[in-house]
Length: 142
Image 1 (tube, rainbow, N blue to C red):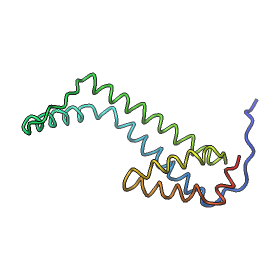
Image 2 (cartoon, rainbow, N blue to C red; image 1 turned 180 degrees about the vertical axis):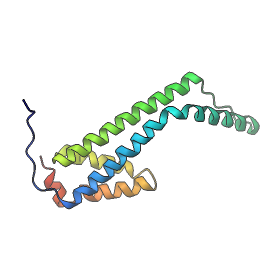
Image 3 (cartoon, rainbow, N blue to C red; image 1 turned 30 degrees about the vertical axis):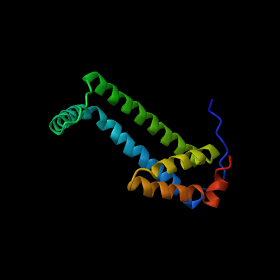
């Protein structure tokens, strides 16, 4: 048995690429970030030691993170990045299938991307242009 497929909403509009390409870039960028995360523990430990040295010479209180706290931060970063990758992937898939929730999710991602200066801002603007295109709106009515 095969799973039922949703009917295709019609030919894909040209500006649909304005949504799908930034989402794909986000998936790959965050996947690379996720792959490098396990190797950032020693770097963060060294950075924390340097910050503690600077804090002691300047009279500021030291930044105290134990090894367990640092491990929790890394695991939390891992989980958040994995969830973000899944959100980007399923949003892109929904947009390509012509689902309306995918377009709304892409708008939310585009607005959040505006805060990531400078590349995220450009990708967010491109996504918002694509999301509000008349043909894309008509394509994602399902």
